[in-house]
Image (cartoon, rainbow, N blue to C red; front, side, top):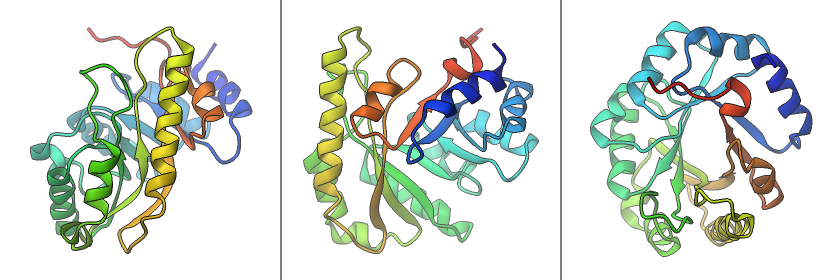
Length: 222
């Protein structure tokens, strides 16, 4: 099936409250334009340089989401245009995003990445670390970022029960953190679920899914 047909099929089963991020990493502009022409406006990339290059070449109404691990020294390359940064896993990164956003007179939306997987390779903070950040005075001084939700990545496993349990963990962390509200923190988004498990994620409370291969086909990493 074509990219536009894949998109249509996925959107037909997504509830209205769930946002679809089309994960376009490693994909050429021609593929992304096919999705764009089919009505998709939100795309996710995991490498800042690649996202910046695509942003230059493509329509400016596109919302670019940074979904990969973020290195602080690269934030400056996306600060001018990025719409949402999913993988914020420490306070120093928030400070850097704030600093770069200020240069462009912008407020950049961010999600706190919570570690829910059993794998050591997955990044993220604990619930108590997230609480400490959001309630700190240092955080309240960051006027050019806004924390709008949480993000998590489940363990890469065939065990559906384990994935479900990890998704439930993220939902409960979200519910706890949601009570913390201030000028630069208003939690609305739970970003969890990818091509293989987005249906399960939605059932577990996800409001944003990151889908790549089910739209664009398998990735080419050559």
